[in-house]
Image 1: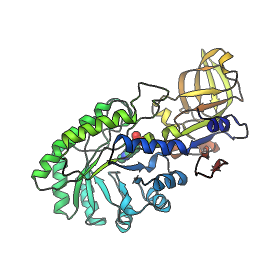
Image 2 (image 1 turned 90 degrees about the vertical axis):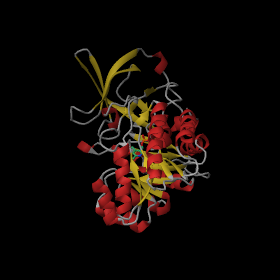
Image 3 (image 1 turned 180 degrees about the horizontal axis):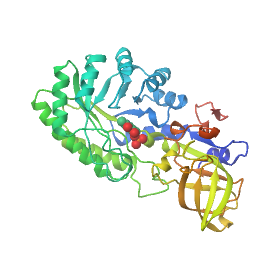
Image 4 (image 1 turned 45 degrees about the vertical axis):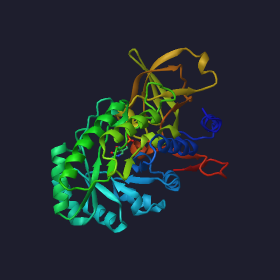
Length: 387
Ligand SMILES: Cc1ncc(COP(=O)(O)O)c(C=O)c1O
């Protein structure tokens, strides 16, 4: 753990719950993506963490942005991104959003139904579009399959329809599922894209854009079985070289959300209550599934530690962790092993830089975690704090 992060986590003046973000980790992770997949373009998935300083950082690093909504577009523009560096991979876009993207010159947007192609042609005429393929999400902690994406035959029909309606079909995208632990998912998805690409080319479509989406997992540094950016990158580059026509490909797009910002963040919380219910030991925290830990409700296993100098001396216990609200679904995780915890102790959740505050609501009046940003700029000495 780095010294500055550790001191802020342990500083009792740090109010809880707080999300502490180390911007150096984001900078280094961005560089790792580019080194692992040379020539690629990172379009940071704004949904993971739309903190204005995070967006500013990724724009300053030269990254593009992947947006899903009008609000994300506005935040991206506020951070200094130009339309040319923005793509939209949300397959469902409302007319107001489409018109605004069109005005701002957003580079390209995804489609995965005839209805959406018609809508884009009407509200953002002439736009570049890419088709989202449905791909295998097995092996991802949070699968995204089912809601979006089409098979190869349908993709070809959408290319034809888009061209007929005056749009510019430029390529394909997919998402292997969030926190994807299977490198093969990317390889198989790229192979599927290659097959569609070849047929599309034979039908006269000049594709140049392959978007391999997000799904890059966080946490290899504490769980070595989790694939690294470098391991995924090697497999991706190999698959691209094998399956995608070399002369066509101009943009290899990556849309990391969690993979770029997840490891930068730690969520520090306080234990506000305890109970023994039957054989279960319960801990109640000042952040729960509504105000910061929604992903655990979706099945994401939390990595959590006790922040105490005498943690190693305390007996190990198994706890049910719950949030502070009155809702009985506000249960973070069960069977979590921790040293014995007392009311007033602090816990820290690792890899909390993505989908923590973005998912949070102040239900029951319990606050969304505060932000504490470390190493924002070269000259920064004091952490920047905000709500
Ligand atoms: C279209 C799209 N791109 C990128 C992402 C980011 O995914 P991840 O945080 O797993 O990298 C998501 C997440 O839902 C998404 O829907």
